[in-house]
Length: 212
Image (cartoon, rainbow, N blue to C red; front, side):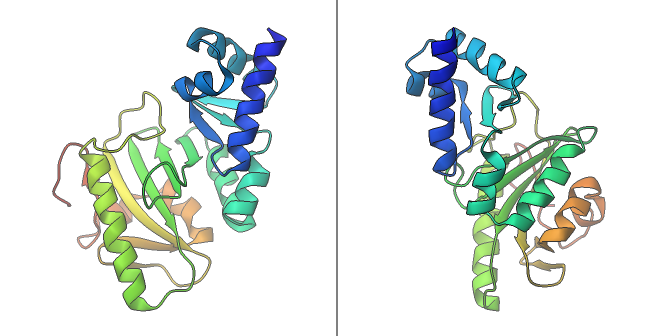
């Protein structure tokens, strides 16, 4: 059993160092050369040790997660993500997905089915932000149409909200996409209704292609 745990742990660590701290159970099984049932037993042991977090059929390596996020995303957003994850009464999961979902860095899912697709941006000229917002909105539409897989386990998504997040700039709406400074992301996740109900905001209801 210990050898299986070590192989799974090694696979998760290697993936986390590459900026992908979360993997599907089937992917982990392939990397560790184990059966899915053997992999489940190993990740449950790692979760008991505090080295992994299981979310549906995905597993996140928490042993190196903070360090990996700080390197790849920045210390401020890493702290905000930890605050978001701490609200388990509202938040189902908050995962770094850079490289897994096109044009999306983070997926945050509330327990009521509201899912935020977060794209991190730096200081950009207005025309560049407009182009990024449009691309992110297209990804959100694809997700709502069930054309992209979300790392949210068995949670049923209801509303997809594309969000641009930056350490610089004031809250606003760009091409219908919510733009928030990093420190305001926590507030948005806890109370998304002002933005969702704003007539200019693009939100996508699952299995519907039109924005509301």
